[in-house]
Image (cartoon, rainbow, N blue to C red; front, side, top):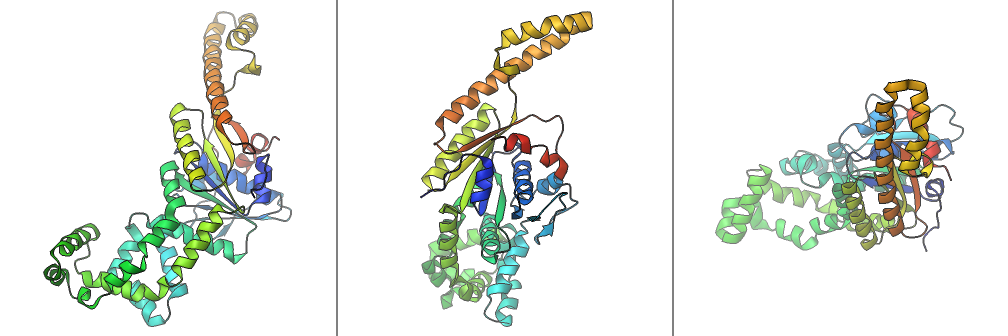
Length: 374
């Protein structure tokens, strides 16, 4: 049974993992940081982790840099909770996993020195998503935090993150591993080509893609990693279940632009099909009509006041005000239509378009009256 939530504050209080997702450029990272600051001020031991390799989270929190190790963030007036932050270090997370699960020092050194492993841990497509899942699992099972706020890459990439557990399972399919560790495979690709012409072609393509010139290293990688694979499938299943459980809430961050809302609708459908819980939507950079009175009436009300105060100079301001009212009218109509499609119980918050970017904890706190107005 899902946990009923009516406000963003409820979402932070009733869940142990909050995943923030959304298109690029909608203020997703800033929103994730603002949520984490609020939860810490409410007394929760909070971690905000970003998967986005860009340094937006550090900028939003006003700290110089973030790395793969949790760093304390100073927040004035923090009563009982605490706030930590980190940025996923893809290579470091892979190495840490090997260090943690390698059956012996010899195997560990063999894996860390393997060129296929080095390529996989730094640039293999989707590797970052795999390690994000590993890192999330480690933080959650560690028990050091009441709440983990995850800042994901832009929408399409965020869906990669959601599907990462299944891809890990597919990647580590036992039938594939057994095939890789067959004795003949540890010879070379040329030998492989003699054994099977089709397989030889496929692995030549693999060599071209990875830059690894000897397939023996690929075979040695899978052979060395076989001990680590034993625990992968159960871990993947646990994390996948965790992402679909009542402990996890997804918060969609969007803006009123039409294209952004189209992507947001796609994200909502995918989350629903994956059986995961969308608990809140945050609309950033929203323009609203003055008092909701309608563009014409608002302009008619403001124009005489401006003309009396500014004379001829008022006309430009009146024109700008009329354009803003039109912008607000469009935002309002699109958001109302989007909101009508959301399931019951999904909290919605609107944050206005701030006059400048936010680069401090104090700036993040200025978002709270809008995020937690209910």
